[in-house]
Length: 347
Image (cartoon, rainbow, N blue to C red):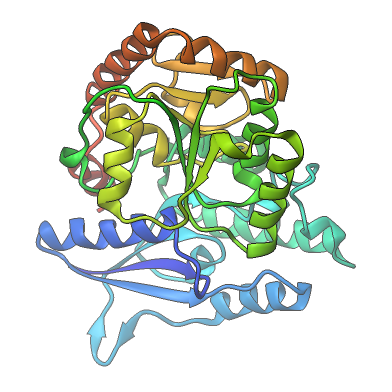
């Protein structure tokens, strides 16, 4: 079967969405399908660019290319599911978040646009039209499914994406640092961890790994750490390789993941495959589908003082951290996350 996977492209930006799309293509090919990734550059600002992207996707004809008929499409992100096709599956990574769950938050740039509310209504209307036309809708987490039901009144089924190279994760001990691998960006809330360190033991170490969305934001985080006197407790690795990431998972005490209402987040299952518990927040979204408080990790309010106390609690009880890690490994391996399940549902 000729299958086109549809995903947006933001030039010079690579993250979990790109990993998922590439791995989906590989999984389809491994099962005998002729699969191809089709991307459309996506720019959500200024508002006319966002509107133009919506119109462009509605006008695209992807029924065939160069005489090759596309038998099926699998759409991953807005506005790609607005493209018409007679055989379309949806595996929704997330919707245009600023039109939905981020609307009333400090992370919303859409509301600040001159016609922000009108554009929001346009997005919801177009989503409802396109999504309701599909017989079955899949998402990457229950968190995304819950949003879809809340805002669009559409039921869906969660299919968890398998982390890349699942069999390569391992544990080599419970070391002298917390590990936080993620893009450096406001939604991931590395800032909250920095604030928490000011309320925790000065012996605690945190290693951040991942590229910053922009250098000025990274510098602001580093300046804040200096103001709070916690710079010596932090290491910024920047971009690291997959093997370096796996090694840090293997060696750290626990993993920190404080993202705001995350769609899914590979970090949590990757940590658990490495027999590491996860410290997350009660508004971190997808991570809460994996982490049980005081069983496979810790769930804290999004409050720096309380988070600092949680960091202290685990830092001073290495036996507890090991127990969390062992429980986490048992939990993740028992969830049956696999590409066979994903492909069997989508195709």
